Length: 237
Image (tube, rainbow, N blue to C red):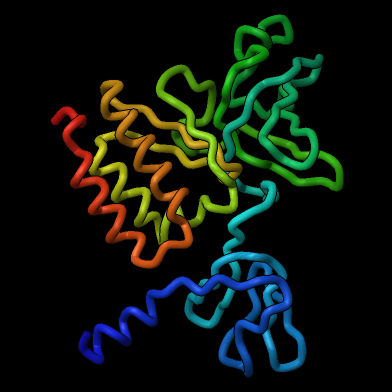
């Protein structure tokens, strides 16, 4: 191995850290998600992967429940209908509610069940996160918000979503291009896949699962590309 290759491998190696472990010393970096400043040290507060971007250092957890944040795109299941809206399960720590007023268009109370019925899956956005509840909205310009009527759903660990998406969407773009599928990755770990045929959708599902299973693996992008090339036979051109 050349000196350049050795240096590149070290830069790409995924460092796994545990809570309390020092991940940086000095003023080179600012503490990001799941880190804290202790004197001149930045310490991890979660088990996960260290990620550095410009002057920010953060941890991508590899275990744990979904932590909702305002603006997140999520996929959830309608669990109940009230006079004012819909109760939706988004795998969060507390209940989520889609108010009637936050629908994209006007909806009569008598028509609520026809719009989103109990058991329906919907793509929505988090409008607000309160102490014990989450408000959802459909009043966004994002394409795809609304009832999910086709395709397949994959349930993954929400803390592995950043690796599935990749930097600036790089990883999920590779999978979309290779499988010819549209893929929506909910920040809550629910992935919606839809393609022109079942073969493409199943291929995309296997690719998503491959990424999730190999989250802490070094050279993941290269391994995903190799996986896609070797398993592309089922995709219809």
